[in-house]
Image 1 (tube, rainbow, N blue to C red):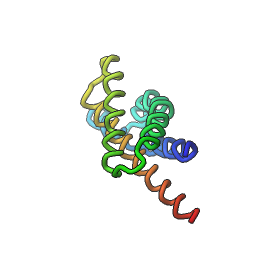
Image 2: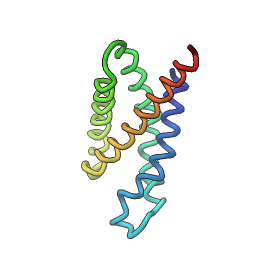
Image 3: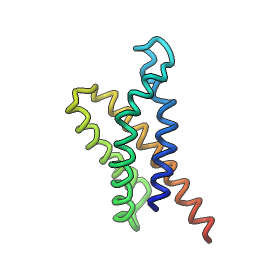
Image 4: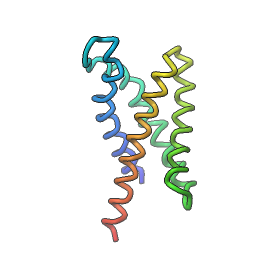
Length: 122
């Protein structure tokens, strides 16, 4: 389970690095990978530490509940991260959009790899 979560975090980091600059298109006047790098300085450590650990805890306690309830728990954890980053006086709306994007990508990748591994073992 831990390797699956780390794999999902790695893929989310790579995908997010290339998607995030689209949200800064208006500020930089074009697609700017520097924006992706700047955002990744905050999101990647948060994703690998907080995201992986909280996802493991959610999956451990989410034995018989629906996928959507698990997704809502992941979004709740991202909301806590948004509150932490808002202390740094970052734009809370943009931070929320980026957190929603990262959580959604992470959750989808983790879900796909979870069912792919389970199907492969049977």
